[in-house]
Image (cartoon, rainbow over all chains, first blue to last red):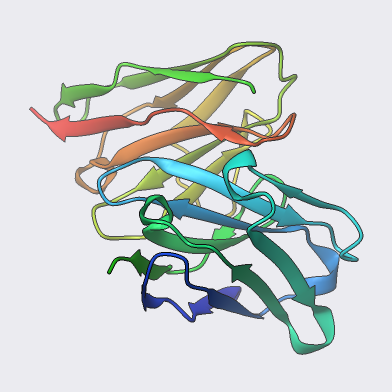
Amino acid sequence: EVQLVESGGGLVQPGGSLRLSCAASGFTLSNYRMNWLRQAPGKGLEWVANIKEDGREIHYVDSVKGRFTISRDNAKNSLYLQMNSLTAEDTAVYYCARGFGVSHWGQGTLVTVSS
Amino acid sequence: DIQMTQSPSSLSASVGDRVTITCRASQGISNYLAWFQQKPGKAPKSLIYVASSLQSGVPSRFSGSGSGTDFTLTISSLQPEDFATYYCQQYNDYPLTFGGGTKVEIK
């Protein structure tokens, strides 16, 4: 069974940093492009970033470029999102998701940016 | 950026009804279109990819069609568990973008 489990969310002050992790199981991570997406409270879905199977191709939504870094460790079956210079607008549930046409989602981890 | 416009933004329907949701892209996206279902407080669930292919385990009452700029999601006979919000997403070009969502409510 495919499972994606995010962790690392929490409360952080504006300007702070947080690192999200996504533990993958039930499939071979190295065979899939992986994504981070988010959903602000009461809002719709927003794609944040994705990373190709071998990590050599990465894309970001403009609003996080230069602040967020997506990475992966296929040997550890893990996906990461390093988030720096956080603002209130980054407050959201963050999901990791498998595939270019997403097939599976994690349960999400809540990031709250507030003083 | 490619804008995805869903309509309607909400609808009321009864169990057994046929429901159609449309999604229009601001430019052609071939068939790189996915549909997702989300229930309150839950993670999204993937329904359809490449416009018309059902993800594994998705009931056959769900179907998708379209290509280019105009797409539809159809639920042939609405079931109680189908009341949710539905989103389309294009993955033809970066940034990947979503429609605003369609909330399907009980009439």
